[in-house]
Image (cartoon, rainbow, N blue to C red; front, side, top):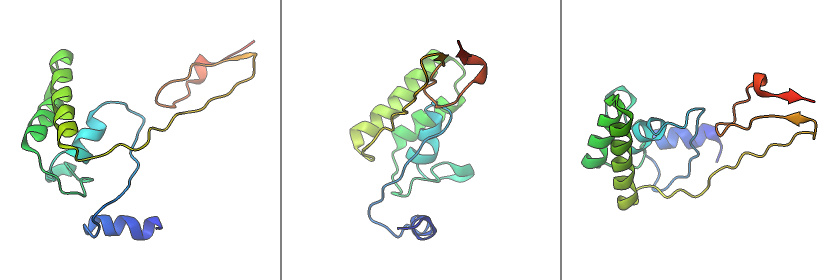
Length: 125
């Protein structure tokens, strides 16, 4: 289905099942928790939750993790939110894109997990 038809249908909630890719330059859990997994709300919260799933425990942990400055406490909150999502089986991850890189033998390059190339980290022998 072309994007010009697919996305308007999603925004009208005119589907019983959908497949969608999601990613970004940041690997922070916030990039997935707030737009995809939280209940729909103001300010873009749950804006891509087209299943209109609502889970108060997930919402509470995810919202708290968005405000938490302490890294250890934030990690606990993120894990709690993801554990709640996993136990409810609201989403089924089907595919994880693997980034393939190649370089000549005389080229050393750092391959970042987010697929960003830092040209300063490339060395040609």
